[in-house]
Image (cartoon, rainbow, N blue to C red; front, side, top):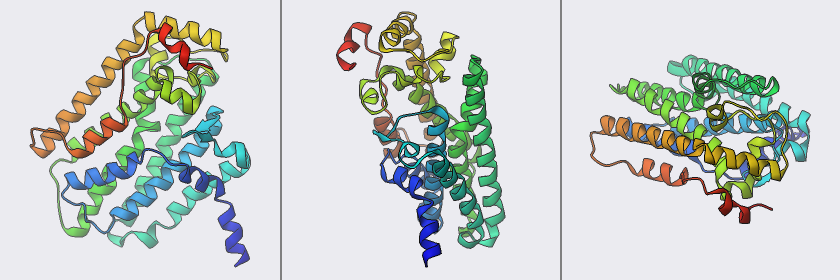
Length: 310
């Protein structure tokens, strides 16, 4: 019993991160895909939700260490409370636990496939994260094509995995689906929208600044979509004055406007694919909620942001 309690304590950094909240996007995405597949009541849906939630949150607590982030969801990052060694161990231990338990949770018919999916997801996620770290460390500014490849692995792979898990669950109810390629393309674009939007609001959204700090990506040499358009990664941490100067440059160069346009282009593509799958003239309640939660607004002029900065 004592041994079990000790093991449980090893997961405290992860549990802290899970309990800190979030937008619940991945759970909603799983329900969304299952609905598109007419498969919402599948017995595996809840298991997929739990495992994806674990996989996502393990990546977050490790990413925060890589990025030297201070806050996640408005709270101190887990590693600042529990230390880097225990937080890293919690993340990787939980990933291994997830893989170890697949045979116990998933039917034999698809267990090997599910395990391969998660291994592929962890592998590609680390490639994406590795590229992000390498570029920032070596002060390399990737092209837009290189950057999209990175986010398709780092961010997009979890959405890709969601779609494939849901499609695989059809086997349990003896169903097939003709929209596999459309669903995978839908998840590709949702993953890109998600990450580019995160890059964009990091630099432009006062509400986001309250959670993470003013233009936090300029603190850690982070690579972002906007800075790829700028064709320059910030090579050293900036004080507030220098951040304001950089904001003015990005604003006047219309790079915020360009990113806003790109996001709306992806939004239109996502809507078009969903309508092709459903045959409906209006978007689903899921997409309406998705775009409400992940809203985008035009960047404020430099003069108007002064009141939001400490």
